[in-house]
Amino acid sequence: MANPLYRKNIISIPDFTREELELVVDTAERLKAHPRNDLLQDKLIASCFFEPSTRTRLSFETAVQRMGGRVIGFADGGNTSARKGETLADSIKIISSYSDAVVMRHPKEGAARLACEFSPVPVINGGDGSNQHPTQTLLDLFSIKETQGTLQNLTVAFVGDLKYGRTVHSLTQALSLFNCHFYFVAPEALAMPDYICEELDEKGVSYTLASSLEEVIPKVDILYMTRVQRERFDEADFKKIQGQFILRAEMLKHARSTLKILHPLPRVDEIEVEVDATPHAYYFEQAQNGVYARQALLALVLNETV
Amino acid sequence: MQYTRTVEALKEGTVIDHIPAGQGLKILRLFKLAETGERVTVGLNLSSRHMGSKDIIKVENIALTEDQANELALFAPKATVNVIENFEVVKKHQLELPDAIQGIFACPNSNCISHNEPVESFFYVKAQSNDTKMKCKYCEKVFSKDIVAEVR
Image 1: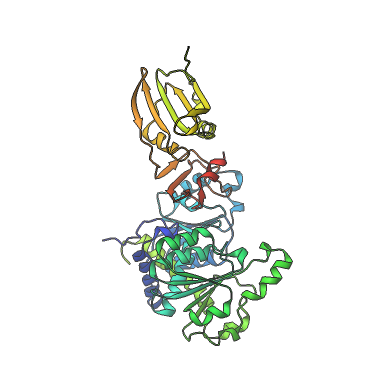
Image 2: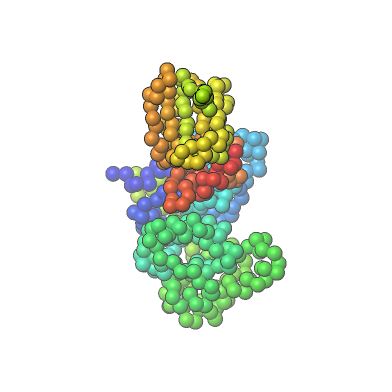
């Protein structure tokens, strides 16, 4: 029987069942331990970045090439027919007729969902505006499983910009399938949006709003840091909140020994460089795991069995 | 003493009655009833025994389908939608909130891909205790129905 993700579009985390999430994570684990260079042999993947990205694009393209596939595509929408006024629907009809799957990033929300309605081959969302970035969530889940041995019953703190941070929204949606408890640590202006909290309430997921990093550090298995963007505040307000959400090495002395710190990167100053040398830092490994998570996903979407 | 009817009886078409006063024009506009080219009679702020005041819309020669009638439930859940043939009511629609609504509203999110692409808007509809929420299929943003209805 074909795996449940075979020939599926990968658009949004809420589309996944718990079993499908576990399948991707387990497959990523296997491919990291036992690399396979044959899973995308004879496959041609279109890598369509209508908006620039470094990590996501390079890790997708690395994932394809590591498994023996080939890549066509573009790294910036400025040089495509989109700039001449072509609709995304038309662009995708054509690109999908050249390739076995389409990986895409686009500045508008809903672009990947729309694209999959016009594509006969699977579409994988590499980020659509402020909406979803499902492969980031998959690599986050993989990193959590890898460091904690499980996704079940964990305590996870999310820190920083919880309002605009799409990675945070998707990861809470995914972890809510695994009976985790959440702490949300954010300035009031960047608090978790009501609709996410309402979703969690509906599902009976427990979460706590906390005001400081220090109070949550001893209680959590995963500390998920995000960047507070200066441009969202005026200078005076920014100065007031800035210090509250910076992680310093000495703040970790009461942390559990198994605590790991994740961050979707790029970081600016919210994690001090000295934290990198602590055994808790895991954000660079996390970024590297992006390749394995994307390998797992591509392998599952393009092979009946892996 | 001479009685006159406020709104003339309809031979063929649809009568949407018991619309909350103030919603009639919104319904007319959103559902493009005036653009059908058929004769449309609109009554605003008519007195109603049950509602105090109400709006009413009569559209000649067009029979609203079940799905179209259900879309009205967003704005006028207690409206009655009667299809008329030869002065007789041949169908009384019981309004139910639809699961999804397609092509009527534009997405309030200006950065949503559904604008300027060859697709119809599409919202999943979910009733909550004191509001009805609509979630855009494309951008996945959730809006209160009143915000969605204000856009166009």
